[in-house]
Length: 94
Image (cartoon, rainbow, N blue to C red; front, top):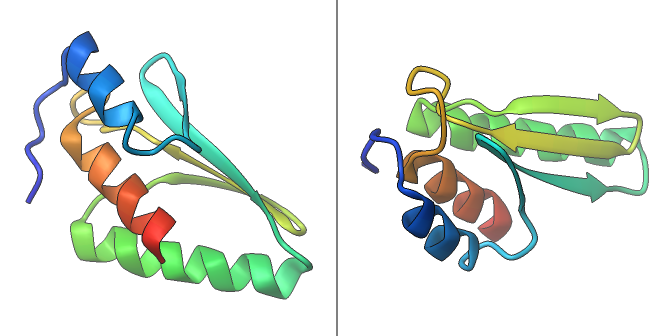
């Protein structure tokens, strides 16, 4: 499992290069998806939920009909850890 220690700025920049569609905002990374309709967006949310549960690492999820925004951070560490980037990569590979 990915380590749960805060990453340095250099480590964050290196990990961001692995997930180019994600954007950094301070102590979080986020990405937005647009789907055809609400059922498609909900199916995506359910897939993300299963991935998150398997890693015991849960994103903040915003849903507005067919638009889903995920925000990742390691809340108990107060910033970004490898766990955030590993989950982002798994979400991208779904």
